[in-house]
Length: 59
Image (cartoon, rainbow, N blue to C red):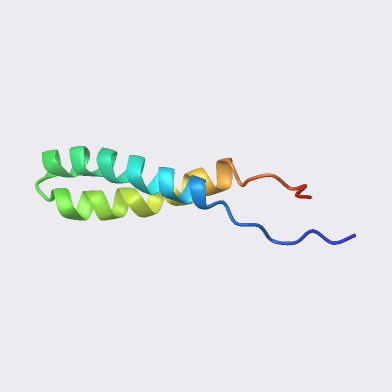
């Protein structure tokens, strides 16, 4: 039995939002809040996608 790849849209969205907020706050201190928000969104969505990849068994 092969496992089909799955998508976790909720994890990607939540990671992007939380990462953007944290990245904005950290980037504001470094002098470029927009770049921090973009980088934080990418990193946060990747982390939350890997930590919570979604259910394997879907009926």
